[in-house]
Amino acid sequence: MLWVQGRQGSVLLTGDLSARFEAQLVRAYPQLRATVLLAPHHGSKTSSSLAFLQTVQPQWVFIQAGYRNRYQHPAPVVMARYEALGFQTKATASCGAIRWQSTDAAPSCYRAQVRHHWHWQAPVAPKTPQAEETDF
Picture 1 (spheres, rainbow, N blue to C red):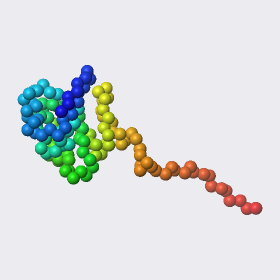
Picture 2 (picture 1 turned 30 degrees about the vertical axis):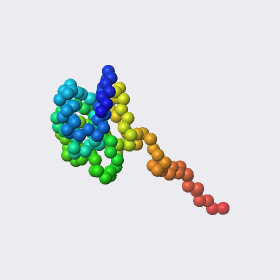
Picture 3 (picture 1 turned 60 degrees about the vertical axis):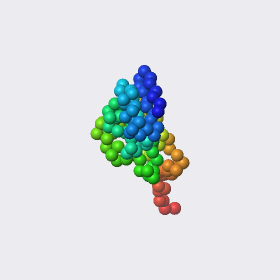
Picture 4 (picture 1 turned 60 degrees about the horizontal axis):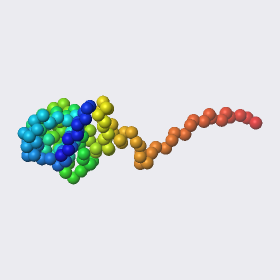
């Protein structure tokens, strides 16, 4: 786990923290708060306990999990918990890389900012005036 604090915000990077260790963390650091929380264990149902989330109170939760991953992270029950607590979420499965700076109002999605070759679209041909028919 890594907790980074600055003047304008903080980030809590939890790794594969389970609910058991979340409880220990909350007992040891009841003042633990973060502007951004990297979802513990990719949003697994074995993490993101209610007590932990109520202590950390993040504005944003970033979920690092691949699209259609075999573990089906994030778990629907965890997503419902984030929503019930009013946390905003961004997921790498839909967003690609997530970029956040403490001076930003909101994080941005790399996928929305950068188009890749597989997103290429043929340019629209400019309309040309139709040649008028004339009798010679």
